[in-house]
Length: 253
Image 1 (cartoon, helix red, strand yellow):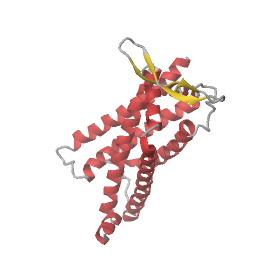
Image 2: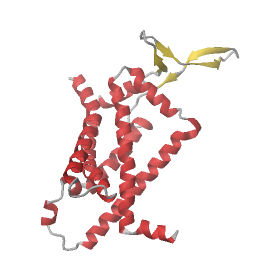
Image 3: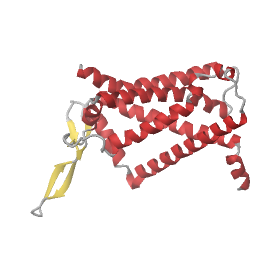
Image 4: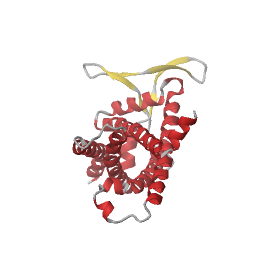
């Protein structure tokens, strides 16, 4: 146990924690982007996706949220510790030393702070819903599937009416597609979102490459290829996330 603690508190251990938590967050970002891209499909796709997430069994959604929150906290704390350690270790740090570093590596702490602020805003905006009033957007029927002839299969549930009789009614779910469109219709919110995912692109361009290096998967032969792969991944994430607010802004013109 003492050996594990010493490892995790060492510089090498912190770098491994950064790599592991960074990899988890990068995979989460990819999954979140794929979910968001369903915005461009018929509305029942993203509404059903959101409905499934909200109704995961046995509180699994809260377990996922707790793990994700812990991962973010560890990533931030360890990142700050490593940054402070690097600054203290190089008091005479020369400007020439930053020239060879990529823009992603030089701005990691700043892009990280922007992403923290954005993630907080994003949760209050679309999850807690206390930044913008979405109450005027009515819930829609939960479409569980669509048959081959295009007929929507609406999920139903048995409920008790005020007079004590039982009746069957369609299951209602928030209209996520309409909520996203309404949110990004506010120009300031849309541009902040685009700016934030631009910062995410810079953060990922260095972070993904660093994961390979820390885990010993990057050598001089593969350095350039993995750096390119990291940039391609980061650019794909930017395009995937930014496409939604951009399309809403274009639709307003």
